[in-house]
Image (cartoon, rainbow, N blue to C red; front, top):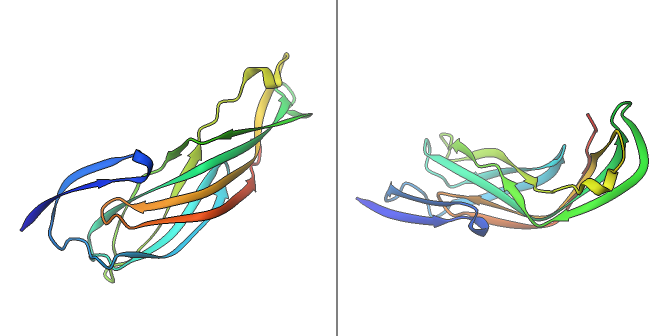
Length: 166
């Protein structure tokens, strides 16, 4: 028996339309562990989902409601930091859709990344041989969804960390 399923994903970022077999996903699918931390400029969301069909492929996507990036101006020619620092807040993030296959126990352990979309105004570090360098990032709240089972979790909190200049 086959049925058509339409799954709308977080904040309209992605829509998947497909045909799948009845019973291909379990009604008991659920996240048992979800955590996040910054990894450079990105938010890394680690998770465990259980109650899945062994050997079945699943896709995951994350998002964040807000990202605040802190920049510092540097001299381009010597890479010397200058005193001027500034923050930019954005409500737009780019998802990192990842696919995983459930193991023999119907479990997926994985991660996805979320990256902020920020435009740095040229006026912030104006002058010869100056550039803005990202030094710190803070994500506020995040969502994680399994595109195929529609399992979903929303986590409230702030996730912050330094970004090492290259």
